[in-house]
Every structure is written in structure tokens, then in C-alpha cells.
Length: 119
Image (cartoon, rainbow, N blue to C red):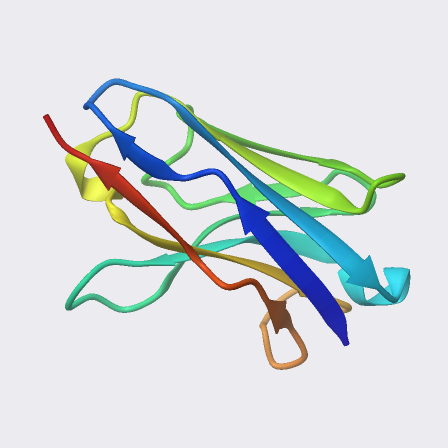
């Protein structure tokens, strides 16, 4: 198991930026993939982005060109830079880490952080 601690998030105006961080402790083998899902009220959870230890990334179509995920393998920490934020990005963002690429059956999860985009 991996313990994940999220930071960042908050209230921002449309067009603004935020950065989320996710620090993992525990087995490095359990963090082959790190990323974020988000869930808005009344909606299903959706993948936002993920990144492998090798730097391969995947993004939801809705955030491509606006969000950038990165990681520092030495610190076992992932980052999600969110730019040009829109009201529809409002959600609770959950960091995760998984030993496998694809799926979250064996994932560990962070506590979640609220992102609110509103004027």
C-alpha cells in the first residue's frame, strides 16, 4: 500500500491556474502510474490525467492543452498544473497511484482536494 498526500486546490476565477501535488510514501513499485481522477456533484468519476515512471502521459480530451501532468520520481511526487480553468473543471480531485497501467483495481488514493472555478 501507498500513502498519498494531496495539496493544492482551492477557489479560482475562470481562466486562472492552480497546481495540485501528490506525494507518495511507501513502495515505489506501487507508483508505476500516478494521476488524478475527478468527480463533480451528480457526475461519474472521470480520469483527468496520468503519468508513468517513464514519463508517458494520458489526458482526458476535456483537459488536453490546458492541463499538464509531471512527476519527480526521486521525490515520488506527481504534479498537475491546471491552466485556463473553466467552471466545468469544478470537482473534487483525487490523486491515485497504481502498480499497473490501466485500471484502478489495485490503486491507492489520496484524500481528495476541492477545485472550484467560479467568478
